[in-house]
Length: 571
Image (cartoon, helix red, strand yellow):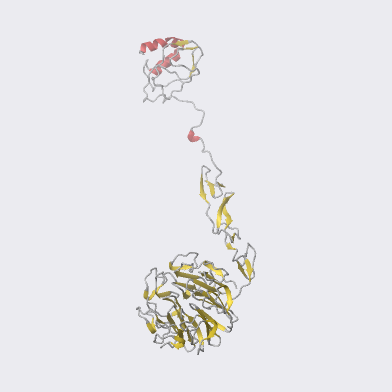
């Protein structure tokens, strides 16, 4: 539409306007058809249009509107239909409908606008929660409001030990306790900290104290044990009275109760009194008497009962010609006794020189070990023997297939040979084809077979000379079993390493360990003894606990369930 035509259409409207308004319009536009943006516009002068106007000219739909120019229009207008405007219209800002305006020219930039609402940046941010308030989103998730109240953070509740987590009133705590545990101190951090099946202070529940001992949640009287020895698949304990009780496998009468029936709880050895020490072998057992003699029972195919015969015995039989014994040890098929004179006498299987008399002939009665006159301790493996000498050195003899004699070779020795480079030894423990020794500084050194990491050096390489067990110090004594070892620590705890297929390491798992791991929940240990794949510990209280393989009842808890952590022997 030409400018003249547009102006002619607007003439009646302009005629009704005041000169001031017309002047304002002209000053705003500069001239018809142009928009001058930098000229201030008077927006506060209302313009009243009393003249009805009929607009017959259609408005082009593609004319761009004036951006940012406020328009007060109270009457809807149809673009293509002529509309009679009889209603007075108050327009705060003069608007030229048909005048095209360049879009990229800022419009009304300089026009002051009266705004009664504070600018957005002056409005304080609205809080969404109470500052620092904690609430529970769910039973397991906690939400904490930020210090400014403008937001919050959520986090799952940590799972406490032996318990499930729970969120209540904005606080994470203990939900429910695992069976056999209780939250007796009420603290959330340590969860359900009490084993109510074993705690004498909370036996069966919080506050239920026992004056004696707690077994399976019931108070029981402790039957004190003076000494314990684990055999291959059985265990024997010496009682303070000098009586001996055994349990576990009894196929060859190794329990000494006159039968071959397995026992899951301790049973007395018939006719045996005055025992000063007991030692379990593979399928036989022996007891040293306070008189200095010894008696043995069980299997006897190699003369290991020492009675000069080869017939097995279901009850204790006397070892022939033995007197003055101060210590007794049983291996798989042979036994040895140390006398007050420092000499060692052995009997039984000797095909690989385990008797130490320089021969490989069977010895059904005690025979002197050649050249050993200052023994301070004797301990036996499966078919090898070792002695700690009074000066702190170690000597060994017998089978040497894996270097278990420690002399740097794998040559069988029928008489004692010195273990290389080892001195100041205070304790000795032999296992199946491997040996460990504790030195005066509390470190442990091992040699021999190492397929399960039982030497504790982090490898599975067998060693024919001693290597130090990594990361182990403060050891009081050491004991060996079937491919694993355990150390009694000076603080009364225990650590084990090596083979662990039946949980014999006591760490709650069945994973083989090449380095020592703590035995779970065990303290106050006075003595350790290892069988093929089970362990028993005597506590300073006299209480007895065992763990590992229990297929033959060798743990003595009345069951045949294997245990990966210590369980009480039930007398």
